[in-house]
Length: 177
Image (cartoon, rainbow, N blue to C red; front, side, top):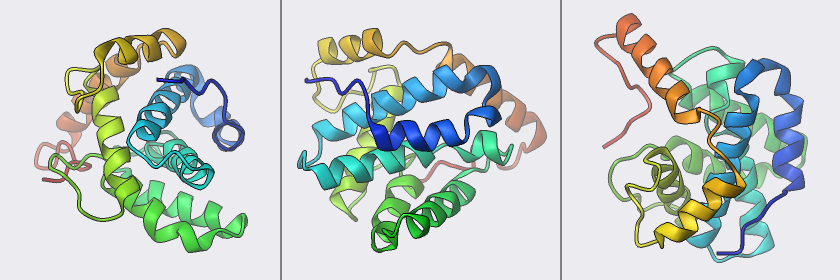
């Protein structure tokens, strides 16, 4: 795996929202870079796909911090759509919306191919490589070396536990079967 260490689109979007993250910024930024790199593995590797993946990576969990909600898929999609409108790429909205809205789907997604690539990427990262979809675990280790977790997974556990207490009937609203 050739690791992408910097992406201007991803960096620009994240930097715009940096103040909302507090101490979680390095953890989320590195999660986004790991997801970006993993999604590229399952994509056609074109520059257009890379840009779409970068945009989806930036926005996919962003509403957790920007909107202070654990029911974040809808608000994250809305922010991505607004961004695409701003940059004149609204014609990508349906695909990027699916990439974001389906990234926690437990089973295979049969819509846009990049949505399935993105789903696999996020599952690999969230599971810390326990789910790997055929990817060499050495590549996953190399990715974590380049982009350390900075307690990202611990933070997700904290947020999940808090949401379970607040919303016991809908503890993980982002999951789809």
